[in-house]
Length: 61
Image (cartoon, rainbow, N blue to C red; front, side):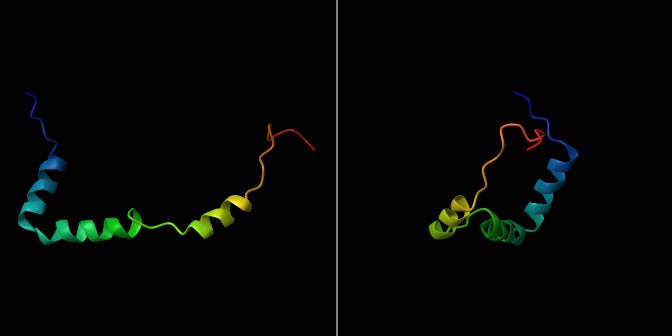
């Protein structure tokens, strides 16, 4: 089996092993950006305010 790990991967794994609190902080910070509940009213407003694109952007009007 192929077990190659880059220097960066080994460094990160070693760092997380020595600092287990970082794994918890990583999950908390991930939640700030990626695990967000979207507001359906806002999403509808964004969709309604969208401007239609021209078929060819460089065509003079």
